Image (cartoon, rainbow, N blue to C red; front, top):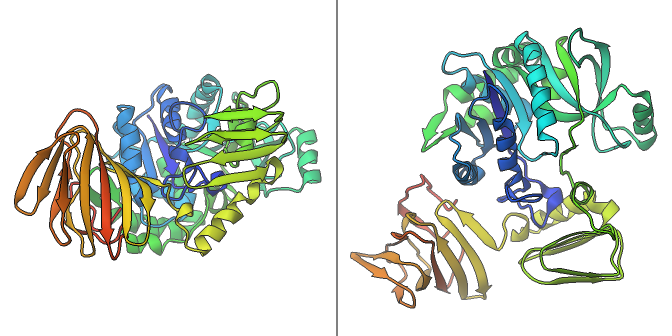
Length: 473
């Protein structure tokens, strides 16, 4: 049995402003109708002998993971919540422990959630070829056949070929090279990009980890053993996991083990590490442009232009990345997009919300879009999914006025419960306990006008919540 382990803890800061800390790139439909995360799950679902996935994610992303799996009608083996990021070695260790919890010792197929693979059939064949090697105790890394002298990836040097398989012993891992060194690797023909995709038995990885990185192995066993069920999620023990050293699979195990194997992979792979990568893998027009959304491009060449909420027009430009969202616009030279991360760092340093969230914020019950705000008022467009409800809550500093524009709302305010339909409204005074529910079959949409001395999202006191939240999350 093969258990896919989907690593979904990244923030995707180089794809800002579309990717945000609380809505990172793996959950976005950047290339097709499904998100990168969903596409990864569907891709592995076509492999023979595959089990339901184990997903490792940031606790703040848990409801997005659950919703995106629900849309695919896929029930995961487990969704494990990391209280803090500790890199890939600890993440895979707790996944291996969870996969073995039922007494099995499956082969793990470890995949980042945010990669693009255009040849899904070629990927499936490679995994099926690799399975016997993994079952025999080898630790396999998939090395991407390089097409350019890329300086943004680490490389794997292949050693002696293995009999009966399209794979090689790993001679060594090398860090990201300079341009001249990368060109030499391409010309040598026995170097591959390090994809961050792996395959091995759960017990073999844990044994190797215990030998090479015992502090990580010990901390992960404690964090998993002390984990607590939270709805459909497994929360790792926070103290134990925070005490775990942070390290990658490569550094902790793969660079040290004598059982590492590299299997070459040529399947149209991209890690979507920057906006230029989307331009490269997308279907460009005759002018070399990749346009998405309401875009008018005149005398524009070799550019990526994406409009999310309004018309974007470009005139007489070349080699640009232009990305528009409701609250931010990025304009960058195509060869400078790696520096977008610096923009995000500066936004975080200035405590600006554009680094963390979109104007439209997703919640387990639906979403809200902040339409307008000033010092003492804020206007939101709230959408509540059918059958969903917000927590029973109150606010110390703000009152709210709700007007239904679509669907039916069940409103609790103090001891009073009422139903509101389109064009009906209600008022929630400061300090009143209240709850909003959608009892209907279609999404409930309403306009909320908040007024008061403090309008922050942390002015919420929850009395009851269907999603196990104590604070706003």
